[in-house]
Length: 134
Image (cartoon, rainbow, N blue to C red; front, top):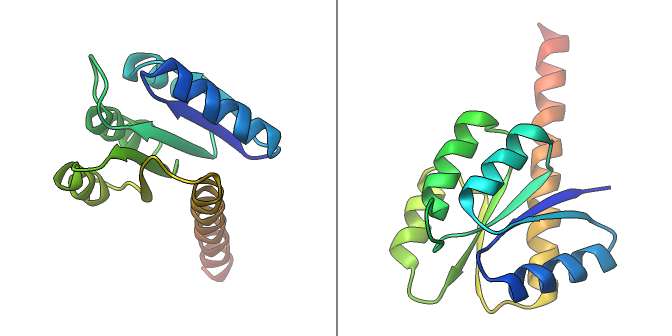
């Protein structure tokens, strides 16, 4: 089962994503802010992180920066509002795996999650094969 962490300061949006993803068979945890997200990432393993950019306190870019230090293997999908192109580009340069512009369709979210998880699995398989060859 794919384990997802949803980080967004808007409670109704977190609840909506949690319910939609759980209904699709994902294991979902939520965090209302960057500090809570970083705590959860240190305590648990996640297959993918859905991360809002604009949040009070520790913003999404700062969370992404910390996540890449804590566990660079976690694929991060940035959730942004329209008009945040410059910030999304910055996040992609820092290692975000993908981004979605709010509001997005349920199918877009599911496809993005499947794509980044599959890409991560392929990376792991390549590492294993390289070790075997060495």
